Image (cartoon, rainbow, N blue to C red; front, side, top):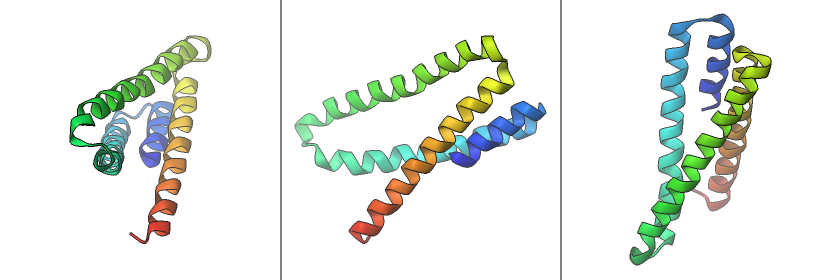
Length: 113
């Protein structure tokens, strides 16, 4: 995801459609892997009778996590321009991805898996 975010910022700054497509594919692969890993961690913790509630809450948080930053980036783009807003947004996504990846790596080393 961090690599996809970096390529997204570069594609916008350089106005490269092919780089934008590559950034989108890379980001989607990273998000898919992160989402699957997160669900694999939490689903076993919920009893079968509670899994519907778990998935509902995961999707509500996911929609908020995607929606709020995009609305904020759109508002920022009006003031500073699309390239600058994309750079800020991509930087935030990249930092969050690196923090999450580092935390996951540390947790897996600690558990020995």
